[in-house]
Image (cartoon, rainbow, N blue to C red; front, side, top):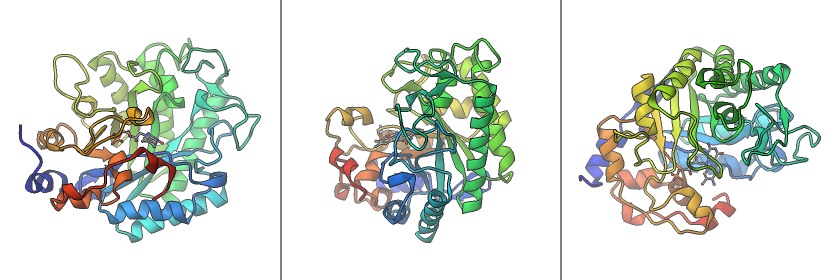
Length: 372
Ligand SMILES: Cc1cc2nc3c(=O)[nH]c(=O)nc-3n(C[C@H](O)[C@H](O)[C@H](O)COP(=O)(O)O)c2cc1C
């Protein structure tokens, strides 16, 4: 199997790519990573510098940490940045400006945690935990089943955030629909037990997500890119599946394409694992093939283990990216997101393209505690 070499890395990764009206200089994306360094929900200068360092290191696109949309029940932490309110939006404008000055491009990841909200969480401690059926990921009935007004309010909150992103100078948006948070709670049959138009088969379960995408699409320019991040796995449910078969996946993606998605960001913990039997394609490979839209892959690029093992104390070491280059050479997917390797070393891409892999600073769990 061909391995990493500087020439191969340059040929494969250092090629431009068009996403809606946006041209990316290369194929590497910074994965969204919650950092909780925004006291009161306001990103400060240190957050701007943190993202600007990754832009200066050459990544083609930065997707920010998840940032809460303007709905009372959206969030769970006072240190996760919000994407609403004058102060937080002014902070975000400064982040976008710093990234652009460093030569980068940036999209906020718009987030609503749904049933994952902690009791009494800010900014409105009394706001309920909400979800499609009030059922949490552990199966407990511990929140409010959303009614039509709740659904409409969340859809509107996403649309407002999308419009704000464009007016603040961001280069697109990403909708966080993975990992068991609100939108994913609708997509996943285990947390969505509704018997109305928002539940049932994959068509019903995709309706909420598609309405959010359509509302965002309507509130921004036609060529303003919308990325949709989804996953099969959920927090603490690593065998979970939204789509059991390629046919279900095709139905779901088709509805989202019709609503206005420009790219699918397919969250897997290991990019090299096949998604369905009988094919080597990973989730992003299937998404590209079935939807005809650009796909972003992610998961353990350049590292020896996957990210949840890190939270359990495992140490990651730097690994060869030959298999990634193989898959991208075959056009299985278009872009690759890199998470922890870019936390370890903001210059990850520059070093990979310069043949300085031996000089990469490996990711270490302790790095999560600082915004370096
Ligand atoms: C500290 C940390 C925070 C994360 N926060 C988010 C997040 O806010 N939104 C999201 O979609 N994924 C989040 N993820 C998942 C990453 O985007 C990525 O999919 C995962 O780390 C796998 O990529 P990697 O193996 O290159 O690190 C987070 C991961 C880490 C390590």
